[in-house]
Length: 336
Image 1: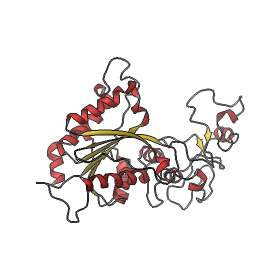
Image 2: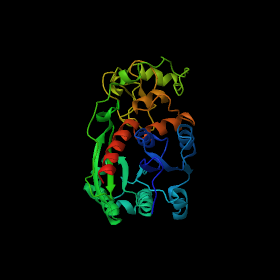
Image 3: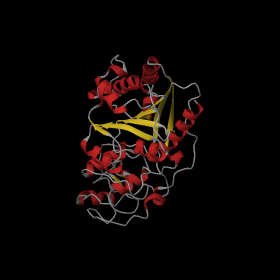
Image 4: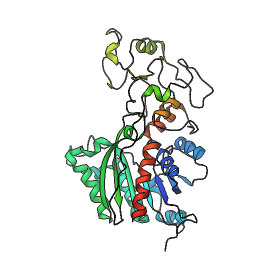
């Protein structure tokens, strides 16, 4: 029979842990980490720095064998598995009569289900982009439900906006909660609203393009003269339409060449925010500022090169949202 830890705390495993945003929320809610898994070396450096006491397996989840899993669990009880498997197959699946989960690019969903089936935690949580909810007229979501139900879980899903949980950013993500418990599946109630961008990051030292500061991760990227000329025209909350037509980019992602609105929550932070500009400084936000908009504390340090650091921040589940989810999960586990 599986045994509980000596302090009788709830436990979790983090698959696709990345920099550790999801783990941070669960740790802040007093969950004990059994182990975490990620295959990106630079992401793992960040995770190890911030969670030195955790067991981190730096490998692909598909290379994680059942024997290894049992060796690391060591007969401990695992309450929760969390993870956000990367997914690139939205554009093809459904367009050529192929099931979403049959697309090789989405095999990591099935790998996560494989690990869930081996461990059989009381609860499993899967996070992904909000558009998965309606993709292929809802068929994709049904496939994920069916796969989890096939291994014995009841499942519910909900789109949560991180802004409603104290994060200064509009960030909509879908969360699937799968449960073996008899009680109801609980999603967190909306709590405090997040702040504006200015309220969140205005206290950091002002720096110019290419500048540095004594604050860790608060270093500005070095923009070209041409880029600086373009961004100088973009107003607080403005976009590429503010740029004179003779130098305005004529094509590309409409989410680029915009300036954060100082009096609103942030746009969704992604892995590449190099062409989204500070509300009153002519530069992109630093990794430290982006991390704050994701609700990371200033003592959470990001390692690796600057591009990797941005990706780590943008790929993370905001810790404040993760903590709210962990709190609801704790209630589920207590209720049974």
